[in-house]
Image (cartoon, rainbow, N blue to C red):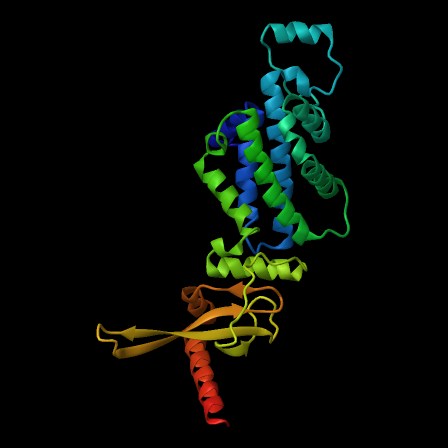
Length: 300
């Protein structure tokens, strides 16, 4: 038997507007679309996100005129009811594709998003109605970046408000963070970033890491890459010299400055390399590089 709280939730759900659905669906999708999530979490999150975008598009049309999103042929009686200020509830609405086409007619600046919307609609339909092969790496990157881009554009172009005003600071901040992670993984914390990169690598996606070159002057060593698990990553050692006012060297600090792998993984922040490798492994590598460099100098 439902308790009072359940009944209140049910009552509230009956009064949800299209915009409420968008915010709720976005919020729930972000819980599933954490970097490194499993396949079914990603698939579920993408469905929620794309349905949320559909609700957002329809909400803008609805704000203009509720009749714009009705699937049924508009009858005289409908116009009378609309004239009385009565809402249309639980009526079939037009498809996502038609809704966006109508929105573009009202706001031509959205035309540039046409191809991305078509991609999202096709993938949404595939997830909802089909089964079989899905390139999840492409799907999650494309959906998470483009839904955020299009949502932002709709807010500014159609609603004349910031995304924070529409979705709330918390939801939009997470949307932006997730979007930017697929463009530049460096914005994520180390372990979260590695989880994302491992997932993208397993899907044969291009890794969103900075392209770098390792100077020939740096001492290097090959390690097992934390992303692809191959013995192809190079880690380079660099040093800082502590000098006093008279130019006398007080100390020399050695550290691992960057990592680069053939799979596309790079890390260029020395402060992140130690927690990634672990303290014991970090200093073991430094000593190994030092020993190797001494042998080279001695001609061994």
